[in-house]
Length: 330
Image (cartoon, rainbow, N blue to C red; front, top):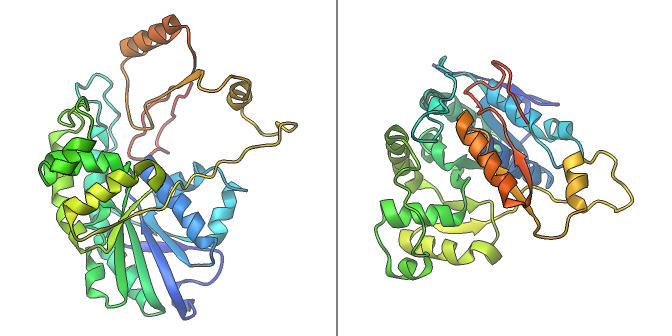
């Protein structure tokens, strides 16, 4: 059975004073998910609301080490309490760049192991509920199974966070979950590719098994803004019928530096600052996609022959434990 330890600069859980509201963040253990909820944690904690960030020790460490964009990377540890949960050991195989499907199926053992977080998360929620008027759970949509026991706690409620865009969620609901919708049909471009080849069959089963547990949440949160995606959020709300949709992004802080100062700026950013607007192509396949060597060569040839300026971020795909081995980046 999983258990947990907690870390914070200050008193422990049993020493918490009676407080009004506490927030519990439960991210999915993959970089794009960990990062977004850590940014949201930082924003909420800036309003002096206690935030508890809940994951495995490996993924808490990963989230903190890769955190960026605020005054100081270490400042997050002084404002947010991290809970290191223990799960059964899991396989952490290398990615397969030759796989016909580019979905990171090598992370599936980690995803399956994460279901064992349910018991320690439930224990934590009960302890926090005894010292707070209200416990707000913000969980990744993929972690709805893990937080399901909040329904047994009278002063707790849950909000589902979606790490993808509202438009991406709409495509899923429209095509796979709720069926076609006349108003959505008019809003979704006709040439949007199908989602059929985006995921492995095993991961689709994983998603389906967790959708049922999202029904008890009080609403859905997106790292977006209504100016960009309000239309799609309204369509999702109409299709679901009983769930509010909130645009609470963007989370990642963007600062415009003084023109005279370039201290601490990465050389790529210094070069980018000198380019004209809309003149540079950015190429990245994220942190979990593995690309075969011949494909990399073809992409490089295509970029070179395009005669367009570009920044290409190329790296090894993450494995389940990113601290187990060396990652190559270019």
